[in-house]
Length: 388
Image (cartoon, rainbow, N blue to C red; front, side, top):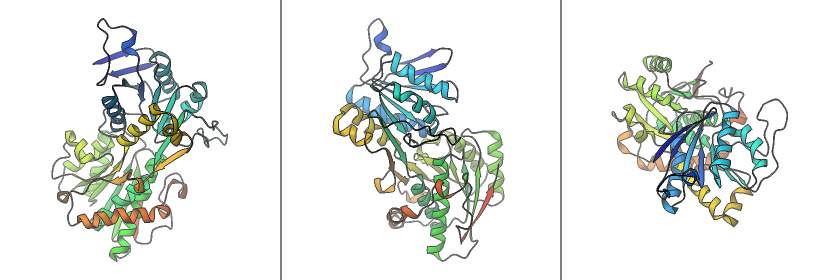
């Protein structure tokens, strides 16, 4: 059942899952939910970050009969985010809310202390116990809360795997096409260059044989201008583009479809499957994806929230939880021989082992300045940074 409710500040989209109890004549109980998903920017069913995070809630509800739904902020601002949080807990009486994306930092810091009985799961989180979300030198941290679980990912791990794998597979002209230069996107990009550098070293390549163009679009939305931008890269000889940020991948796919021997790396989910509607099934355009285990991570956290006790304490007492390749939570897509030129299953498996061993040495956002490639770090890969 779908309903669309509107108010001055929020657009509410409701999808009642398996297990929902439907009242014969409607009524208030229809609009009460056990768990509510609070979306990031973009659309819910984006084939990527939002959709696969939300699938974790769907899975939980399908298994237990709980009621769940999602809300999307009317605007990309803190007041809109606070509005849908309060809608979820005050009107829908949610016992658990799942907020996704770093943009929730300020709203959650302001709201969580006022709602001690609502369990909050923050995915792709910053550490709210150690944060200056206004970047003004003022500590905005909140006190430790028994109702907050914070989970983020070591995106540098799957970025590294992607960079290493494509160089090992014979690609030499690479590009990183990021959205906004936020920590998660920066980690993807830094890992990608580190992986390419490591593969170049292991292959004995000469300095400059591998090139990485590097750019942040400043947006997570596709546009005709971005299609043109990426098409120019391909025309200049770029072979494969790591698209890292929401639906900008649709612009990259369109640019790739407009020529021959143009390839794409997806992000967050296995976009070889989720982007078929955009035509990415051709040849296939998407060689691999740097993935995060969004679906399983959300389902596990929601399960723990409702179970309570030690299961929930394992989340709340840990502070910010970071999941990487070692937890099978930040890896590239499963091996499919048809996607690769020469890469074998054995080599793929070896990359997985290698990234776990190298995890502590892979660059993160803390190693750079404003997301720019790190000067003096790369001896073999030539990085061409295009500033916006």
